[in-house]
Amino acid sequence: MTTFGVGLGNFFGGPPIKLAGADVPSIALSTTSGLFRTTLPFADSLGDFGAMFLSFGFLAYVAIAIALVSSHVLTTRTRVGLQLRAVGEDPATADAAGIDITRYKFIATCLGCMIAGLGGLYYVMDYANGVWSNDAFGDCGWLAIALVIFTIWRPNVSILASILFGGLYILYLFIPTGTDLAVKELYKMLPYVVTIVVLVFTSMRNKRENQPPESLGLPYFREDR
Image 1 (tube, rainbow, N blue to C red):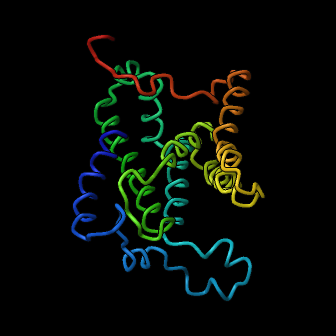
Image 2 (tube, rainbow, N blue to C red):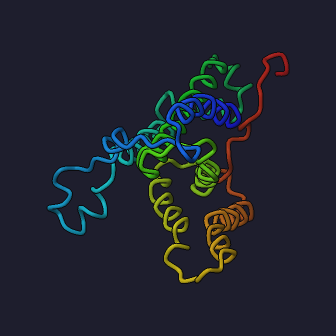
């Protein structure tokens, strides 16, 4: 899906860049970006609190809402959440219980890709001020995967963890390193280093609730049951 998504984005993003005749391989969608970056009208009147929590575009709050809804579905014993978790843990047992494995996997994959797409939309329209260029996301997509691992597959924890990761991701901007680009690149590794440390401690504790779904990423065939 990653390869397909990158290729699809470049396929549809390349022609507008050529039509715009830009000097660099990018195109700026300033007007559209302004709509995505519109802040709440009363944010400025709330001082530091408004600047810190209410001065973002609407997609930032959509992300928080998605995390809370996902956490509610997956962790509060809703029927859909329990069946989806059963499919992730042991699809053979779930299949024997009458759960439609193919439907759950297909819908979960589509929803996950849609959420990832919203992340890309935020990156272009809000974070990058509407500037699109092919292969411009860099390592941000992989950083999101690292965040999922860091939060031990808990969507509600990801809200606070994303703030931590965001701080670590831009920490190099606030640490005086002069012109030494190598040191800056080392600071950019901090989110990944933190994730590795968490994975090491998680594996050492060996608690079942801290482990990924047992059948994560594995195909299921009823004939192999």
